[in-house]
Length: 395
Image 1 (cartoon, one colour):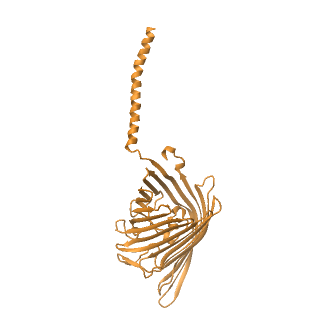
Image 2: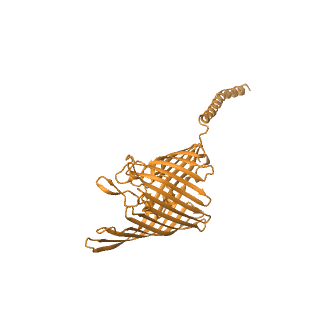
Image 3: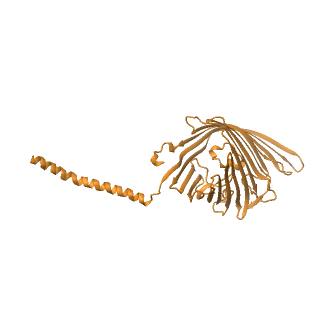
């Protein structure tokens, strides 16, 4: 019996110190957790966007180009050529990440993984990279890179969702570094944004980010029942102290089964020819079912303003970088989109579109040409949403 008591006592002597140490460590851990919470009790992170998206198309183009000229004697000469182009191509491969930090700070990032050749700055292939501070329900401040605040629903759509488009949209280097302040009214239906950023003309000719060219943009997003607006007034510096002005009126009607938008973009470097340089575009969508959408889209660009300026030894540089002088561009087309109900993150599209770029005869000796293209396109867009796979504690 004494031996048994001795053995039990020996075991207790060995276990008790370790037990005490273990209790002491657990107390320390709890204390550290409390300290972390007390350091920043309001720090909460929540992902709002976390996905990859890609689009690949098969496209066929039938191109007919016609040209002609008149020599000083009045003799006309001309000709034409046809070409066929087709093949598979990858249009977009994007990584998107966004989140909220606490109640006031948010961020967003969109990177084109398939790069566009960069020549101006480090972030050429980054569409969005900004941080936003929300002071209250009405005021917010945003800094970083994003699309400058220009109105219009074609401009507002993510590029991966735009199949064929105005020459204005296709020529616009819109993702630029800047700062913006936004105000939202009490109803939440009206948002005003004042944005100051680099001018798109830092990407024009031999200009660079440090050319000292800025843009000043005032933007209004309004919602009134089925009617929405994306309006803006923009001043884009093309030379120091010289601006081209945009007035953009984007209008949209949205109902259960269909929607229609109409954008008008007026561009002017002076008042004498105020309505000579413009774009107009419209799209109609009919949602036949949750899986099927049919659409029609058409537009027209024109620049007959004749505004030029001098860069180096070239005295005839177009002031409007988005539509060259003495040109007209017209396009129209029909298409469809299909999303399987079991996996709506997959989208199949198909469309047929026709476009014509025209350079009319201006004076004797000038050349005229007309470039007509018929396009048939079938493609797939796929989105991998990592939010669906994240554990709740990481969201």
